[in-house]
Image 1 (cartoon, rainbow, N blue to C red):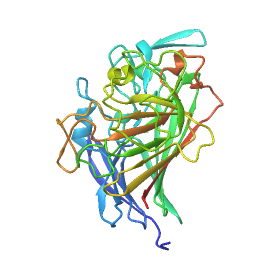
Image 2 (image 1 turned 90 degrees about the vertical axis):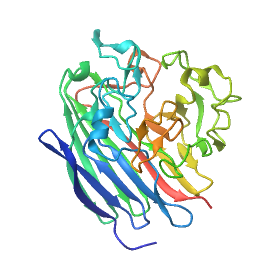
Image 3 (image 1 turned 180 degrees about the vertical axis):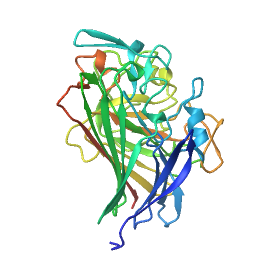
Image 4 (image 1 turned 60 degrees about the horizontal axis):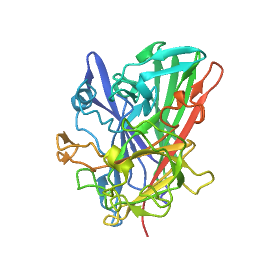
Amino acid sequence: MSQREPELSRELFGRLGDTDVHRFVLSSPGGVTVRVLDYGGVVQSLDAPDRDGEPANVVLGFPALDDYVKNSQPGANRVFFGALVGRYANRIARGTFTLDGVTYRLPVNDGPNTLHGGPEGFDSEVWSATELREPDSVGVRLELVSPAGDSGFPATVSTEVTYRLDRDDRLSITYRATADAPTVLNLTNHTYWNLAGEGNGDVRGHALTLHASRFCAVDDTLIPVGEPVPVEASPFDFRQATTIGARIGESHPQLGIAGGYDHNWVLDEEAPFAAQATDPESGRRLTMWTTEPGLQFYSGNFLTDELVGTGGRPYGRYSGFALEAQHFPDSPNRDDFPSTVLRPGEVYRQETVFQLSTAD
C-alpha cells in the first residue's frame, strides 16, 4: 500500500452575486480525485483509474457554476447532478404532510408532488466550508442553517455534511443535523455514475447488484402505494449481478410508469454491502455501504442531449445512474414506513461510503 498521504486543495470556481463559490480537490494516493463544490455540496467530478491505470471522470456534472444555477431554475429539467438534496430527498405526495396535528403545505415541483425539498432546496445553497486534513484522509465539512418556514418546512434545521476521501479510495459522506422544533428530514447525495467515463455512452451495460429483497411500487406520480413488494421474479431483482439494461425495456407496469428504474429498494439488513456496480469494459467497480434503510436507484430515464457535461459531450437517456441512500419516499404520510421525524434534542445521523476499485 502506498505510504503517501491524501492531498487537499481549494480553488475559486465562480461567483454567485457577491459570494465566492469554491471547489475543493480531494486526492488519494491510489489515483482517485474528487472535486466538491460548496455550492449545493455538489460532487462535480470524480476521477478514477481503470484496470490499466487510466483515469476518467466517472460522475456526471456541469463544467461551470452558471450551468448548475441555470439547472436549478423553475422550468429547467432539474437533474441535481452530484448535489446534496433536502430538506426532504425524494417525493412528498401532494406537497403536504401532517405532524403533531398541524398540516404543512409545501411548494410542488414534480407534478402534484414536492421533490427533493421543492423548487429551492439545499442543492441551490452556498454552504459554509471547512477543510479537513488527517493522516489517512482529507475532506471538507459543509454547514447550512435552514430557517423555520424554509420551503414550507417547520423548524430551524442546522445541517453538517462531511465529505472525506481516504488512502483506500473510499469516499464517505456523513450527515448530522438538529432541529429546534419538530420537523421531518431526509437527506441524500444525488451523484450520477458512469464507470465508463462521463459522456461515454450509456450505463445499460453496467452490472448492478442491490442487496434488497423488496421495493416500493409506485403510482403514476411515483408515490409509493401499498406495502413494499418482493423483487423475486421481476425486473427489480438485482440480488445477483445483472446488467441495468437487461430488463429495462420489459413491459412491466412499474417500468412503464417511471420510464425505467426510479424506485426505492428496501435494503436487506446485515448484507455485505448495499450496492455494487461494475463496468465490464473499463473494469471499474463501485461498491456502496450505507446506514440508511432505503436506496433509490434511478437509471437516468429523463436525461437529455440538451445537458452538456464537464467533458463537453451531451448526456442522453441512461447516461448515468444514481444510488440515493435515504429513508423512503413520502414517509411523512406513511406511519408504516421508517420515521423521518426529527425532534428537538435528537440528532439526525447518516453515513454512506463509496469505494472505487477495479474488478479482478
